[in-house]
Image (cartoon, rainbow, N blue to C red; front, side, top):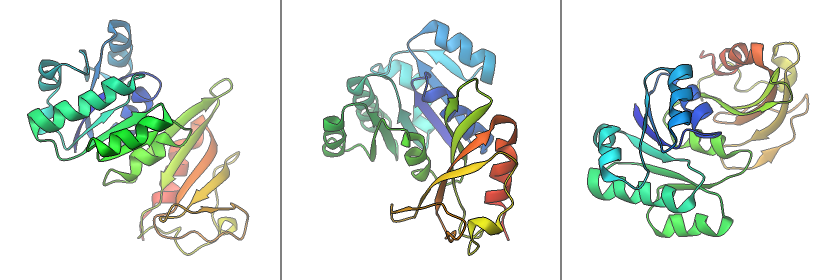
Length: 221
């Protein structure tokens, strides 16, 4: 799927990287030239300078052919405007935006944003559930970046489904810190916790083992 991400900062950059790793085609729009240069250096020529509130910038980013627009700038106003402009001018099928202010999440819903998510530690996990895939979502680096907090939504046909956490051999140093069911209920990640279809697991993972963790948890039968 082709996805346009508006905002290439602390949320947009890792989100783009994860979605690319999951096989999506991504383009990033950001107003800051230095951020764009950094993105191009890290991810390739998939970012350009442009304002979230500019129809021309959205057009140049290829919004007309995008399956979704994901607005993750630091401004709630810009995020809402980007989604509304994409919907009005490009008839985009799905709009997703971060609301940094809790009060604005309801406003996003009233304004027709398909998914307005609050800027919490699980925000990228919420974004992932709105997309038809099970990507590895890197929530944040920890300390010296040797570890990272990641979220993975498990496919219904995965080999891990129906097993307990103690029955899964995780990479050395990996710790499951949270389990969320498909209904949004939290489960305690103890050894006897049963893994069910479409569960989301949030894990603290050594950075060099994260890809292996994703492969283990998303392996299909």
